[in-house]
Length: 120
Image (cartoon, rainbow, N blue to C red; front, side, top):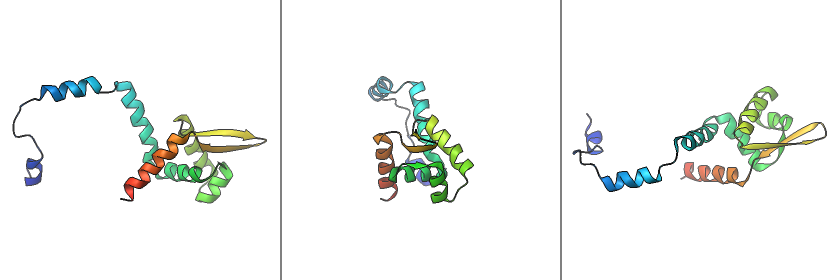
């Protein structure tokens, strides 16, 4: 075992009941945690993050997103469907065109917070 790993592990088996109780009382339900993990998974693919970033800037149709990101329309449509199913983007129809935007301000805030974190 490396020296650093030893420093980070408990050297005793004493359990802290007050800490365990606090965690157990405040732990989210497994279904909620699974939904949260699925939500963050949507941010785990660079293409989806690029699309979200583009939609952070402006509402766009598939053609515009495809052109701006230099991707095929089918690839963009596939990722948009996943993002829409995860409630990260929404769409609206105007004539024959469908325009996409971020679902709500929470998505913008998450994008901003993530960007602040990686730029530290």
